[in-house]
Image 1 (cartoon, rainbow, N blue to C red):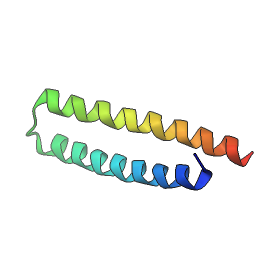
Image 2 (image 1 turned 180 degrees about the vertical axis):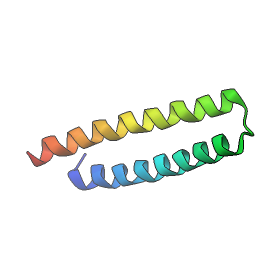
Image 3 (image 1 turned 90 degrees about the horizontal axis):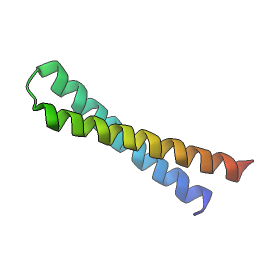
Image 4 (image 1 turned 135 degrees about the horizontal axis):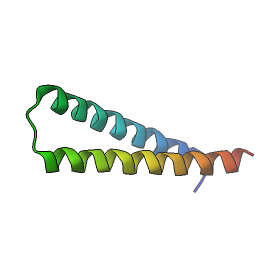
Length: 64
């Protein structure tokens, strides 16, 4: 995968992470949520964070 494609994919993941983060914050602030649903969203957020870190490492390797 080219550096440009990785950067584009990373931007997409950041957008998804940000939306998920906002949704989680809103659910927690409202107090109206199902524990399993919130936990699944948090797992997804963590998985996105891990994937973003992996892509950042690949981009750094290509740049270096």
